[in-house]
Length: 253
Image (cartoon, rainbow, N blue to C red; front, side, top):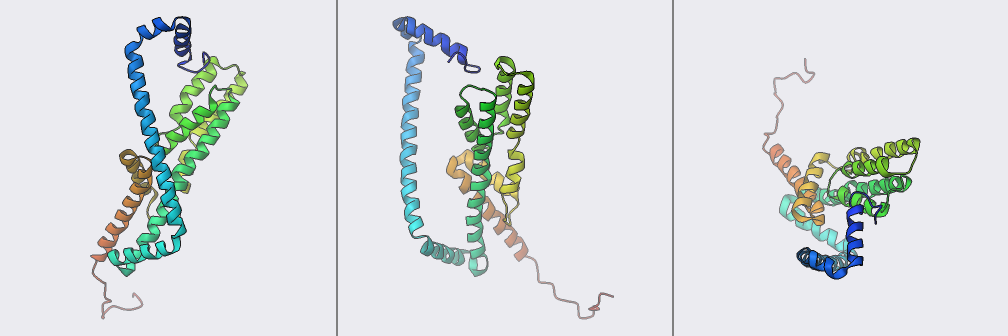
């Protein structure tokens, strides 16, 4: 614990104090321990609620998967009824493609970057490399640049690491490139094959994540993509049809 970056020394001192005289430690930090216990109980309750919600969502997803074919046909009819036979199927296909795009462009890129950073943490001898890789995954899903995690890790490698200058230089270059990899991967994978520009999908995913958590990634992206398509369909629908001028030369001369 003493070798953990940033907080290791303080945690080690607190642990030594508690192991030496537990009663005095509890009396000294009674109010803090009560607050921590209350917050821990709240966090555990929230985690259990999210776990139950995940299990329920998994069951619902299994039922929907079993009836995928008739469900798709029903969804296509509903979209066609609401938006018309011309735009309804297009909007349904856009919704499906947007969900797949967010899965690969947000969650997929975050997973790839977390794996790359985890390998770099192991090569650099960073303590708790797996935990830091998990933090990188969560940051990537939340659309927080992973470089904010890489910078303090590099500070620890150069300050307390036992690697040589050459090894530290190579690890630094690797971690910086891995921390910036999402700037290359995200434009390639997010919005690929969609009629909606990539920034629209990204803004919808970020806004949904802020307002509704993980599920908001998909809801926000789909909502903004559909709104974008509907808006431009409305704009183009207001344009009058152009009829050729009878006196115009067909050859353009």
